[in-house]
Amino acid sequence: MLYLLDANVLITANSTYYPLDQIPEFWSWVHHQANSNRIKIPREIMEEIKAGRKDHDLLLDWICDAEIEAALLLNEAVDVSLVQHIVATGYAPDLHDDEVEKIGRDPFLIAYALADVTDRTVVTTEVSRPSTQRANRKVPDVCQSVGVACSGPFALNKALGFKTGWKITG
Image (cartoon, rainbow, N blue to C red):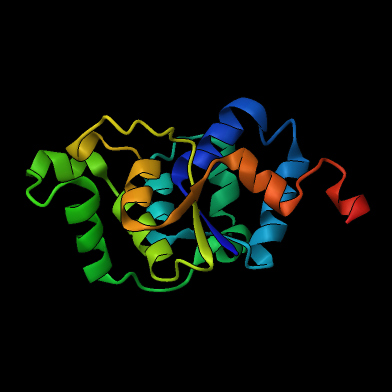
């Protein structure tokens, strides 16, 4: 299984439960999983993360390291027809420009997973809210409406066996 990470997965991990300067084992594990082709970040999502770059931002320094970026980057082109399908089916077929801006690059993330639904899962910190409509829809709900597997970061950690002693034990 290939897990495709939403920007919020690494941003939230660093800002809350796995700060880079406190839990470096997690970040080594992410790098290892990326090198093993189990975790990737699509180019559009990587660009979204980099666009928020600030001086002295440990996460962005880490992700912009050439070795880390090369390991994490999903090196393929998106199928534009899948992106269009996700926008029309998962959000609404008649979104206004401001709504398209609001959904951001999430349709790209989901499109990469839709390209191989048997072997790809979207990972996001967003929580399902089925009652939301149009541009307010959450990634898990859009994934469900287009038939893409979606999980949270702790399910990813469990599936791939993260533990702080991962280098020692396996």
